[in-house]
Length: 205
Image 1: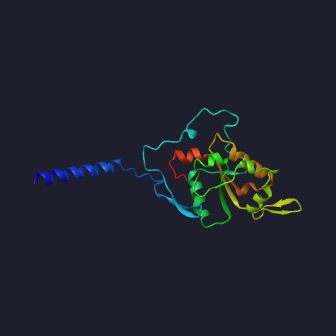
Image 2: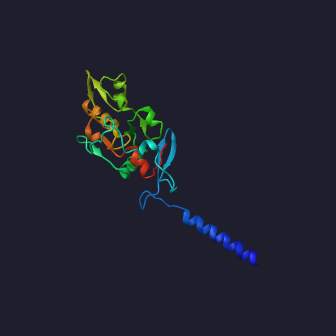
Image 3: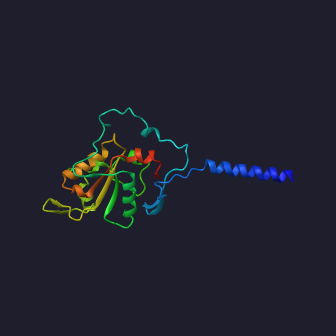
């Protein structure tokens, strides 16, 4: 009988310990996760539950040489700047809206280290007026060319990001698009980028 009591108490302590160790990390009080499309599959975006998770070294260093790692402005023209909750809403809405794109403007090397689910990699280096593929890219983004002039009446809504407030890759992509006539009201900017996305523990692919 004593053995059964001890065993039961031991099991209760183990369960209590597991419950104490469990971390219920939500996105907001009401929101636990969202589902996004990533490379043809569905993926759940939520916050990491492990308290031991750390940022990778590329995103933790505070001493970054400027240039190129200069602090970026909060506002770029009339482009609206978003935070994490607005980015999540954009991703959620994007599932049912073919007229929106989440763009990772970083170079391939950065992109391979992890990106926001549902993002496509369109490096800022490809978004130049004299770029080799710029006509094809602008067409894919919804632009139409007539007599060497571009119309963006049916252009897609773009949400552009890079590594964070110290990274100019998204800023350059946005400014290049604006210079080519892309409407500022069809561009959104996630200034926090991968650093803030990782810092708040959201899913990375």
